[in-house]
Image 1 (cartoon, rainbow, N blue to C red):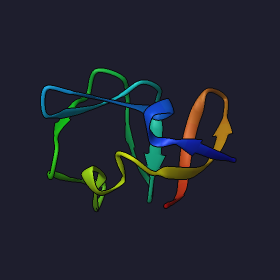
Image 2 (cartoon, helix red, strand yellow):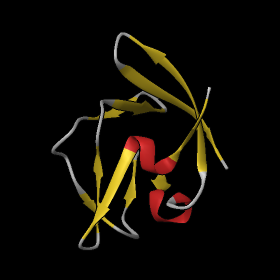
Image 3 (cartoon, rainbow, N blue to C red):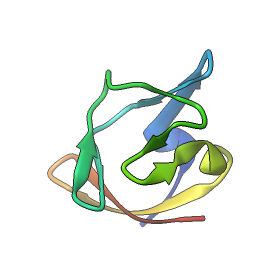
Length: 69
């Protein structure tokens, strides 16, 4: 399903914070694990997608990211 970046992540004071558990490429993040804008996490610079959308599969409360746009 297609979701907005802001549905899954908050951007606060230069940091990106997952709102829900997420996985991508076999790695995961949980709420409370923030990282800086521009930092590469799980092989991705999430700051490129803050105004975009993600294709995810939601399973047992975990959002498995499939692609970014």
